[in-house]
Length: 265
Image 1: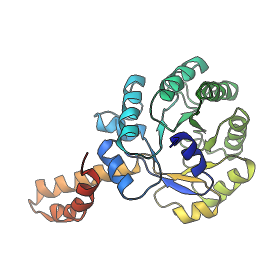
Image 2: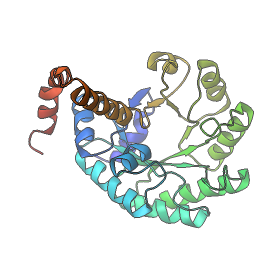
Image 3: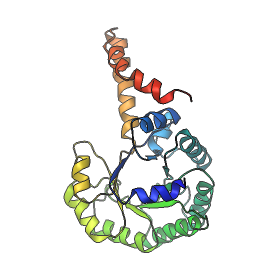
């Protein structure tokens, strides 16, 4: 099966794409029945004992290989800003990603130190990603991300304008993390003609509500890794403070699922 073409075809109907942070979590999520997976830069960085944004390109590409090989599912990689400011740097990263078992990837328009890239440069970076991916006989499904809302600039008009520009540059999927209500999702969907990925938020719209608003794909970002970290913290606190074992009893609920998912690996 051509996983890239399969991943592309999945966008014809809405689906949830969760974000594992290692091979084990990828196999567990696959066993639970999700149709595709995506990496999480935050979850992976945390697993290395670092904050998000502190992973090198070589580390990220190696991690992508691990996740892609862990299951038969298509995997889309969070490649942050492409690990470089220039279109040439993005092209190099996409070329490396194309040489893995990945089905897709995302490139964002946030530089970190420099803030949001100027629109013209941001478009050139997306175009470089697309042109590079299309050198492969089966191109990666490239998602272009506008980081406005995630970075404290909830400018819907600018977000839509940027997504439209990324669409014109050839992006296969569009994504504006932290759209917080269905009205915003509907506004974006009405303004584009590409599938829209929406990030699931705590206290925000549910998956069915996001699908009803027009989202093609709903991802979890670092949320599942955060949930696992929370379970660890709460269990450790109970162990340290009370010395009781309720945390262990709770954990036993999932042992069978985990063992089945990892059997034969």
